Image 1 (tube, rainbow, N blue to C red):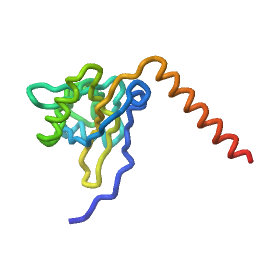
Image 2 (tube, one colour; image 1 turned 90 degrees about the vertical axis):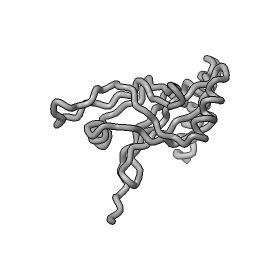
Image 3 (spheres, one colour; image 1 turned 120 degrees about the horizontal axis):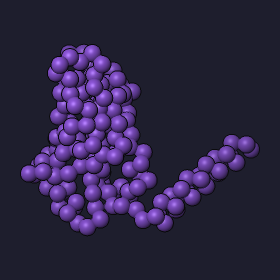
Image 4 (cartoon, rainbow, N blue to C red; image 1 turned 60 degrees about the horizontal axis):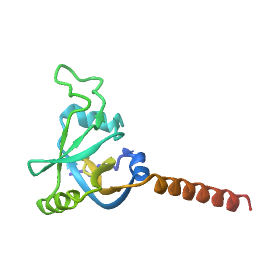
Length: 154
C-alpha cells in the first residue's frame, strides 16, 4: 500500500487562543460525508465561532463551517451542520467531568488532514480569559514583535 504525502491543510481557530486559556488538548476524528472531506481538502472550512458540546455521552462540534463542494450534486452537505467527534471512552469521560466545572469549555483549535488522509480536529479544554488577561496577551505579543524587530536590525 502506498503512503500518502502529508497535505498542507492546516485550518486554525486563531481567536481561541486569544479568548481562552488552553489547558488540555486532544486530537479527535470527525464523522464527515464525502462532499465535506472534499471541501476540507480544498481548505474550504472555517473554525470561527465553533464550540463543542456533549450530547448523550457523545462529543459534537457545532458551528463549524465547511463550504458546499463545488462539484457536489443533489446530495451536497449543509455548510453548518453539527458533526460528531470521535474520541476514546476514557477521553470522553475526562472531558465530560472537566467541562462540567464552571468557567470551562471545549473549543476546537485546529483542523488538519493526517498522513492517512483522514480529517482530524484538535480540541482543547479551555478556561475563558478576562478582559485584562486579553490585554496582557496583546502586550506580550507586541513586546515579542518589538524584540524580534530590534534583534533583526542589529
